[in-house]
Length: 489
Ligand SMILES: Nc1ncnc2c1ncn2[C@@H]1O[C@H](COP(=O)(O)OP(=O)(O)OP(=O)(O)O)[C@@H](O)[C@H]1O
Image (cartoon, rainbow, N blue to C red; front, side, top):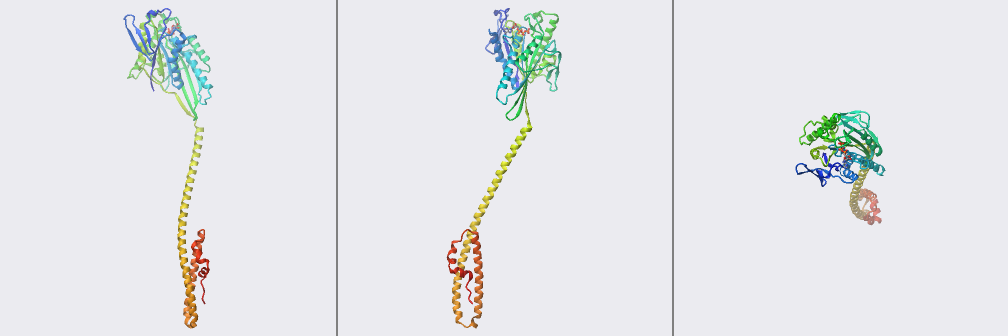
């Protein structure tokens, strides 16, 4: 995501030696500052992301700057973004006051440290199972005369470039801190070791660029069992103040210091002006100064960056120079990335998901089996219905044939009786042929009767009960005669 460097202006309170009558800068609303020229009676208005004027209560004044500007960068860092706040301005304009402050009115660094540990404690005390585990580290170094010095360690360090083109300070001591008091202790210790000198406007002028870095690592387990890791760094920078050699009337070592400070600040200005162009040149001169080399990522890379341009209320030239610098910085874009990693502690979760999948598969196959059984039952049911209909039809047919046969048998019996009467009245010799014919007829009739009876019994055994049509003719003597036939010798 592309971010512009956020630029704020902080107007310092006039000191005891400065008269309210000579104030040239006035903050209008929260976004505008008017600068009035001493010579020409004209005023210029400049717009920034935030403009802070001074309040009478020094602590409230500091709190306002922290709340309106700095807190946002702590929150970004807790989200997993690298952030950076740097205070820029002429000597004595209030940079150290803004970043460090004093015990009665602490500046951004101590306030941010306190709030960071408050957030950590809140998470640690909460019942939420997904609360992150914090690991907080800090380091502190200064760049003095183009040399990196560890303010918490022993040695001079070198700035190196990693394979991914980001830079780091090699050999810098980093301390894991568990309590805010430890962190503030390190900050105080570093400040005491910082190179300080006197300038024409500031008896306690910082002669080096000081970079206090807080590294935050958060590890949390999401409800799905994923491990979320967020890493971010907060760089809080108090730059050395720019000063004009003529104005500061310096010489010797102090002149060299001033020259180096101005060299690194002018390189910073050049880098900012190149980064501000829409068509950026391929080579940005980060390497030209230790300051820009170490801040490479914060100026043009993976960082959410804020510049606080501190201005003195009574110095038109210096204030205008700072305002121009700050205006340019507003066009610089960085590309902050979320430094978060989702670590999947896979094995166990995969196992659980696999067994769930297996159970679902089994349930599905049971449903399918049941469906197949239901289908089969339905088919059998239909076949049964069909068979029953068929049996009923055949039964009706058989009963019809049987009735016809019973009638035929009765007619035959009657005919036989008649024939027997006729036979007994004629000569034996004359009727022997006729008797034979009657005998064959009778046998044939008996065979047919047995066959029909067998079919009838088979049909009855298939169907549940006796067909009603059978009740009549077979229940009387006719049935037996039909079954057995009557043998006439
Ligand atoms: N907003 C402010 N309200 C009250 N006093 C201030 C404010 N800003 C700065 N001062 C005072 O002004 C003096 C110079 O401020 P400070 O040391 O912060 O300037 P600086 O920009 O860091 O200077 P240098 O670059 O020389 O180190 C200090 O005494 C400081 O307490």
